[in-house]
Length: 156
Image (cartoon, rainbow, N blue to C red; front, side):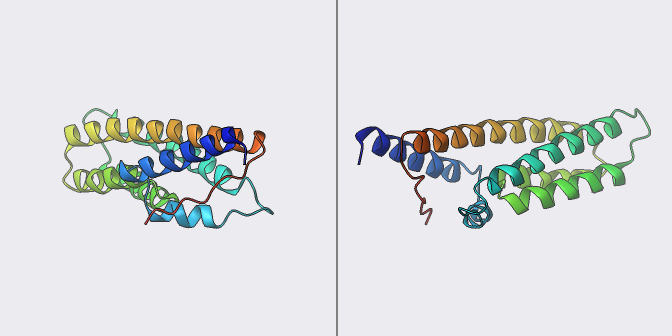
């Protein structure tokens, strides 16, 4: 095997492991990756693209709802948080899901300041995850372009 390909594959393995160790991803992401095969080579990228589109929409909805001074509809914010929690859970976005759990509790308590802080954290977290997954896809592309096969990474 080409030394360059082997180096890229090792870099990829280490990068994926770091995403799990740092709590960005959980086992659901592993399940999602297992659904991708030669017949659907872009499956994970497509699912994640839909997830991140949802993030933009839902974070925008929540920001607008929280911007209604004095008349915040916490049930509407909570419904958006619930939807984002479900989406993040289904793709294995562990940190985003964790923030949503806390965010939902803040909505139920009608804690405006807490909701605003949590929304900011969710916004930062999903954007960070998006950048990290883009780096992962770029590494996959480099491996394939170099003539290699993207390795399966055993998380356990």
